[in-house]
Length: 215
Image (cartoon, rainbow, N blue to C red):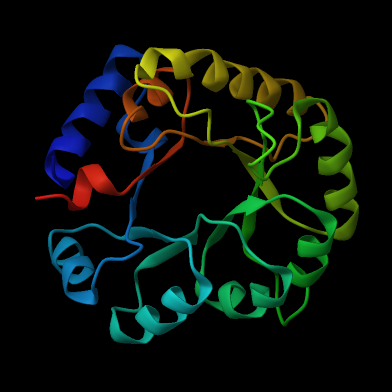
């Protein structure tokens, strides 16, 4: 694929769902890719990029244009929050209070966060299990953490349709939360193999790496 192909497929999925183009952000997940490769996408007009390693993000940012909107999409150690926080517009992997405490340190308002939900209840994955999301959102809110949405990585499957129930469950969980937490509107879900299904189920952010950067 390519950025153009991913964009075309994403727009088609939006249209089929009765949604508008401005309801979706495509994150080009650039981990492991050079500043030259990122720069080429930037020159093509893309601005939203995702990294999942703190040191890699730190090293890339100074060599690329200031108006790139960086997102952090991977697991984050609390002691690395100070590296990531000044560089990004959003953290997509908030999952515990210790990380929240580290995220709140520093000057100014901290960047927005998506609460990571372990929607498939997989023991090897980070994230809050669904029944604890409400209490976690309330707790983080009391700390001042700006939670704007939910994020998930569903179980790995061969058929993207198998991910649909997980995406639908995250959307339903978001909708329930909005009664008491109206700021929670975002759904960060969908990657290279299943982003079209995720969009159909309400994704507002998709995190696509391989399908954009592969030749």
